[in-house]
Structures are given as structure tokens and as C-alpha cells.
Length: 192
Image (cartoon, rainbow, N blue to C red; front, side, top):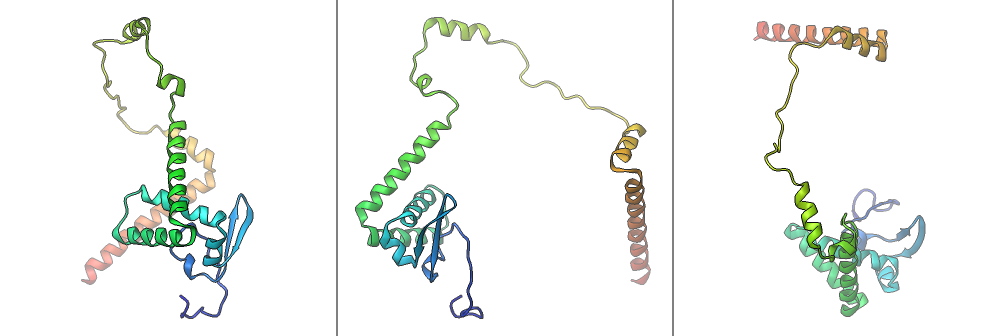
């Protein structure tokens, strides 16, 4: 922290979280790989640029999620601070825009085209849909499983793919591990 061992040292913090930002001496805001804003927390809020937009977007996204009481109080503090620097009407407008943008994005992700969302079906379409539906079919088929052991040709194929030397080493180390494990158990049982 500001009074810890690194108080006089330069520290770089890369984050999307806003809880530490008010404590920072200098904040560099990057957007699309370019530096858009730079300054202290209060300076950046006063500029009403990309940093303020980021905070409003962060606030709107976090408000939609379920949160613990500590995070909720943190977000309320952030919203009050934004309202103080940017104005309550401006923040409310930006939050409303962010919600609208999120809703439009969610609609765009819908696999159905927008024109079909509001289209009405004709009687001919209903008859086609009913003709395709099968009745009396099984929803879930019985599972089939093989019985028996793995064929030697499978092991040979794997050994060839990995390399014979690596396969032999792996088997040797596995046998040694099991031997040491049994030996340790025997030693502990005799010792106790």
C-alpha cells in the first residue's frame, strides 16, 4: 500500500478493476492499443473522456450481476463519485445508453433473424411444420459399450507415436514409482 515497503518505489498495475484506481498517482488509459488519457483519478474524471466512459460502462455491467454487499457499496460509492464529477443527469444518461447497447447486442446474438421475430406464420407453414414432426420415436437411444480389454495393437500404436524410448522410460518410471510407494508403506508399517 501507500505506507508499505514499496511506498517510494514505482509500481505498475494493469487492471480492469476500479477499486484501486483512486489510490493511484498516475493512470494511463489505453483504448484500441493507443493511449487516450493520462493523469490522476480526479483529473481523468474531470476530462470526461474515455476513462469516464470506462467507469460508466464498468458500473452498468456490474449492476446487472449479482454481488456481495461489499461490492454493492463499492459500486454505490463509484456512482456517487461519478455523479459528483460528471453530473447526475449525465451519468444516468450514460447508464441508460449502456443498458440499451447491451440489450441491442443481446438481440444481435439471437440466432433468429430480426425479420422472422415479428413475422406471422401462414396456414401452409403450419401444415409443413406438422408434416415434419415424427410421432412415436425414441428421444434417447440406448447406449452401447464395448467389453473386454484394450488390444495390444493400440499400445503398439501409442508407443510408435510417442517413440519407443520414451514409452520404455515412462513404463520404467511408473514401475519404479509404484515400487517406491509400496516400499514406503512397508517401511512405515514396520516403523510404527
